[in-house]
Length: 360
Ligand code: SF4
Ligand code: SF4
Image (cartoon, rainbow, N blue to C red; front, side, top):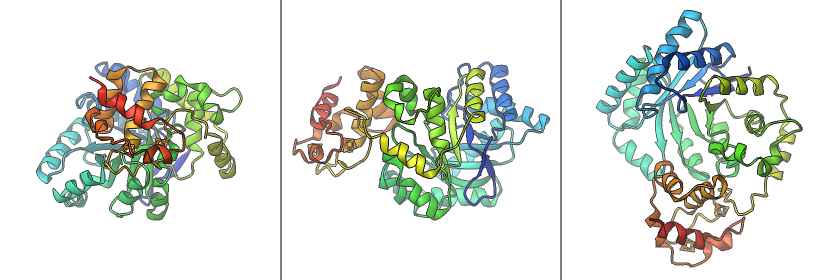
């Protein structure tokens, strides 16, 4: 296992982390505990969860597993989140989480899922930062972190405020262009950087031909997708949402056989990944719509339909659950053509927006 600094916290975290959002059988406590022990025995020491994962059941099985890790003297760090914004609500949430996790404090506590800068401004007005700082002073949480679905320069803007010790955001061989600017702020502010969705929500293993540019001879798409991220020296932890023990074993095997690339080799790989024909790469060059339409988010949702051969239901879910936007908003387009002129991938944005707006 490789360990890296989590920003300036003094904590050394495993480059491969355990995401608690995909347990295949979350009610099978024995299986979940075995998965966590197997991961910890393999050197994983970063365990991430959230109250919304299986309606708090993920936190509950982690609590059971942490007791076992304590007994086995295996080291670990806890990471969870809150979507609450007001002090009383946050405090109640933390108390519930500490009970479920069977801990006296949480190592990395996240302001959960900042989707827009306006959303962030509203949360600050509710006093979220003061509430987090008080919890930290009281020792109930150790580090103030944020999880974000912002893209492009927006993540950079959020992080440059300098109020966080670390960030969790989506980054993979599928969307690295849209998120790369985050690392400018991560370096400048010396933040811990945890990346989620390392396989693009399944897009990478389901489309290996498209991701040949990251694959070395004999390498599976899954191993290649993880190793591509491990090559990035600014990433502290790559979170994998494990379904079962076999997946834990496969990820540990990918780590054991990992041969790092140099920085120059990684840049060469990234430059080869320009050929996502018809697929929005999230570069955000189109993101200046006079109608205020968040075009990259609509096009990302349409990507899911193209790459995963999803139907409209899944596209709708991506819009609402991942991006917090709705299909009707795509109907605001007045077809000025500015976005298509700017699009690096020559994507028929107007046609796709019309399709989305017409969905029922
Ligand atoms: S064509 Fe539509 S989506 Fe594109 S910039 Fe113009 S109004 Fe916005
Ligand atoms: S639609 Fe085109 S310009 Fe806009 S983010 Fe996607 S690839 Fe970039």
